[in-house]
Image 1: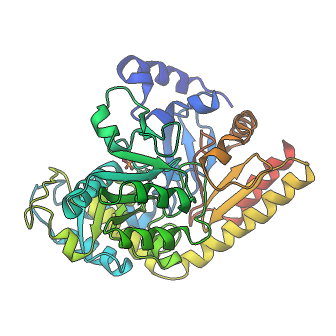
Image 2 (image 1 turned 180 degrees about the horizontal axis):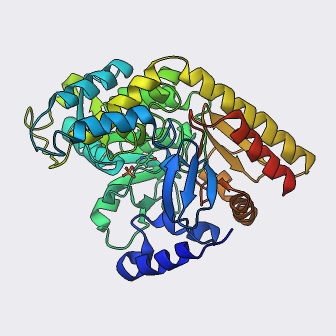
Length: 423
Ligand SMILES: *Cc1c(COP(=O)(O)O)cnc(C)c1O
C-alpha cells in the first residue's frame, strides 16, 4: 500500500497537534506503524488519503454499529441541521432520545446528556460521592473510564496499598481516593470493603471489559458486586460506554440481569456524533442540578444534531433482528478465525460478546489485566500490520476491542479469514 499523501498530511498534522493527533491511540505507536489518515467511509469500508481501502473492524472505536455513513442516520442529521446546529436551549429531540434510552435500560429513570464518555464517568462519580457522602471510588485494572483525573491511576504494590498516578499533572490527593483492583476478583473487593467499611462511595466497572481486549465477567462477578455494594450502602456504576446498545439493546445489564445504580453511556448513543450520558434511579438523579445540588453543565450538551444521529441509530437497532444477526456474524468469525490459528499451531484466546471481540496471542486463560500482559504483543503488532497491508483494519493496539457492524457482509468476514490464511 502506498502512503504518499497520507505521509504529507501527517507531517503537517504533527506541526500543529501534539504527536499529530487529538487522541493518543490514533498515532499507532502501540503497533509501531504509520497512522491512517482517512478520507471517507461507507458501510464496512474506509478509504485513506492515498485511496487505499480497508475493511474496518474498529468502527471509530465502537460507535459505528451500523457502519459508516448509514443513509438513515445521515438524512436525519441533514434534516435537523437545516434548522440550525445549536441553541443552548432545550429541544424536542432530547426528550425523544432520553425516552428511548430510559425504555431500553430498566435501571434508568432520569438521564443527563453530555458530550463524551469521559464527561459521563466524571459526573457519575461526583454524583455517587454526593449521594453516599463517601469519597473512595473502586475501579478495576485494565478497565478504561475516560481521562478524568480520578481514573488515571493504577494499583499500588500490595492490595491494600494506595493507587499510583499513571499521568503527570494529576494531584496525589485525587489519586488517593481511588483504589484499583483486579477484574473478576471478588475476594479483593471484599477485602477492601472490610478495610474501608464506611468510606466507599462507589464501584465503577465495565460490565464487559472492552479496553484490555475483551474480557467477560466470570463467576457471577457482576451479581457479587451488586450484593456487596448494597450491603455497604455504596453505589454500583456500570460504565456501558462500549457495551450499551452493543452487546444488547439494553446493554450488558440486560444481558446479565444486574441493575446498577448509575449507568454511563457514550459511543453508540451518539450514532457517530459526540454524545455521552449518565442516568439512574430517580432517587439518585434528582440530586443533579437544577433539580438538586450536584453541579454539572454543558454548552453543547443535548445538541440537536447529535441527538438526531443517536435517535436514528437507536431506531434501526430496535427494529428487526439486529442483535441476532450480529451474534451470528460474531460466532462465524470466532469459529473460523480460531480454526485458522489452530491449523497454524498459533496459540490464541478468542473472547467475544456478540459483535465485540478480542484476540489474545496467549495459551493461558484470560480473566484480568495481569493475564492480558502475558500475551504476545509483538505477534499482535506483526498481525496488525500484515492485516492492514491486505486491506483489513484492526485496532492499532493489542488492548482494544474489535467490532463488527451491521454493514459487514459475509464477504467481508470471509476476507478477514482468507487474509489470516495467507499470513
Ligand atoms: C471510550 C470509553 C470511555 C471514554 O469515552 P470518550 O467519549 O472517549 O471520552 C469511557 N468508558 C469506556 C468503557 C470507554 O470505552
